[in-house]
Structures are given as structure tokens and as C-alpha cells.
Length: 145
Image 1 (cartoon, helix red, strand yellow):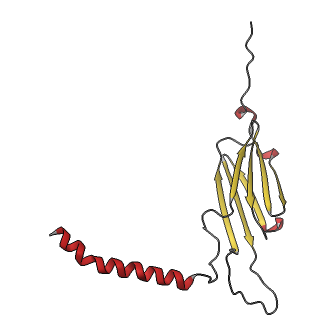
Image 2 (cartoon, helix red, strand yellow):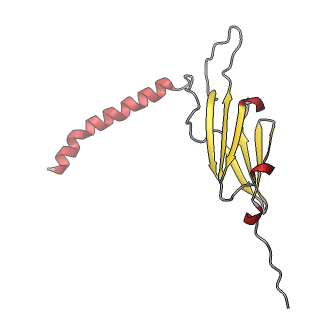
Image 3 (cartoon, rainbow, N blue to C red):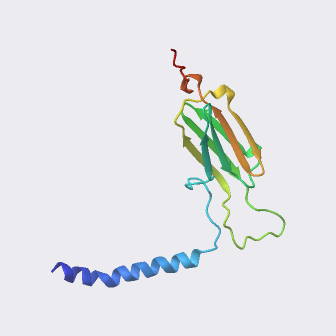
């Protein structure tokens, strides 16, 4: 009995898969929506040294004045905006690079000394250096004889 129900639904599953494929093919190459909420943008590297955490973010086309960086507790927030392509007579024929607002939140493993955080934007890569709070830095204890 169960097999008969599955067999009856097979054509509908196949039809549903085909509709999904047709729409995906039709929309390929169309301009994308805003980047807000787009998971994984900007692409990040999170590196750690003994005394700090370093976050590198790929942000081609984003100007420093369009960025907002916040640190609170163990959380780094990157917010910004990448402008739409513009100009007289410009028609977008294909858009693979998103434009618009974005937010990316990074959970950190350590408390950060917010007064010593530095950031630089060079060649489309944002580098944020987040020094750890002194109590978070491991202290090597020498062994006495």
C-alpha cells in the first residue's frame, strides 16, 4: 500500500524538480537583491596571535566612509554599504557582485580591549586588529628549582 502512494507522487516530485530547474535557469544572470542578510558577505579570515585577534574582510568597492565597525564584549560587527554601479547611460546586463547594505557579526573567543582596536582598509581588504584584554593573554609561569 505504501509503495503505491510513493509511486503516485513520483510524477509530482519530478514536475516540482523540473519547475525549480526552469526558474533557476531563467533567473541566472539577473541582478541580485541587496546584500543585507546575505550569509557569508563579506568573506572573512579570523586569525589569532597570543595577544590579539585579527579579522580580515574582503570588501572590494567599499570606501572607508561607508563602513561602521563596532566591538562590544566578545562581538565584532561590520556594517557598510557597497554602491550600485552608476553612470550616464549605464545598463546593468549582468550582476554577480552584490550592492547595497550589509551586516556581518563575528563572535570572538576572547574579551577585547576596545580602546586599542585598530582598523585599516587597503586594496579592498579591511583588517581589524583586536587586542585581547590583558587577563585573557596566557602568562607563562617559569618553573623554579
